[in-house]
Amino acid sequence: MLLIRKLRDLRAVLDAWRASGAAIGFVPTMGALHAGHMSLIEAARRAGQRVVVSIFVNPTQFGPNEDFSRYPRDEEGDARQCRAAGADLIFLPPVEAMYPPGSVTRVHLSKLTDTLCGPFRPGHFDGVATIVAKLLNLVQPAAAYFGEKDAQQLAVIRRMVADLDIPVRIVGCPTVREPDGLAMSSRNRYLSPEHRRQATCIFAALRQAAAAIAAGQRDAAKLRSDMRAVLEASGPLQIEYAEVVDAATLQPLEQISSSALLAIAVRIGGTRLIDNVSIAM
Ligand code: PAF
Image (cartoon, rainbow, N blue to C red; front, top):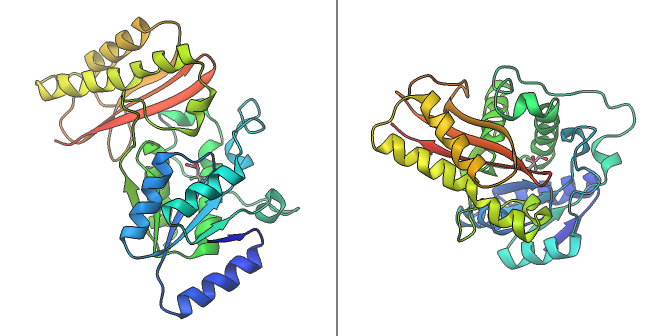
């Protein structure tokens, strides 16, 4: 497995791979890797691609009061996991390489970013879209793999790729969960044992709402208030949203009549956690 930090070295290796006829599968990450990331690497491997993993804690997607400086960084552990999962190359650029002095361009998407996490994290999706566009331009993969846990991020990236005619297939991969249902996330390691136990309320609320829909409930307001009740019963926490949105537009629904997304964002002991369940009709 190669470990590359310089953009020109990355381009040279990938040009040679492409010239030899290899297809490249790309897994962009911010490191602090877990089983969810491994499932993305495995999906790329199953597709018979050379697997490139980027590890870059992207400053432009963090707000001024967010956790950029304390975001977990574990280069050695990440490299070990990537090697074990069969990645072929890790790209670890320094911040100055991705945002050299004078760089001012940002990719902004409207509408899709007006709901869910957008209002709570101003500028976040501009940062995500910008870095993903840059990484896709650098790596030029046949396919890029993203987790469905970040459903709004996935929708934003699909839209951006379509709008900017970026020639890549975006593959969404199912959320990987702990045995008790908590969605895997690099931020789970911030949780105290007590908050870790409480965090199971997120998937419990989503699962209960999904079961209610399966039993015939179509009233989105009732689903929202029932999800909130499950979250609030778990102990002290701050609910950012417990939403029922259209799966394609991410706009809030009144009635469930087509594919929907149940989505939650909460802060437990200061740690922001998100999760979602999609409902096919
Ligand atoms: O999901 C993430 O880890 C990040 O948002 C991404 C897509 C790597 C962009 O920095």
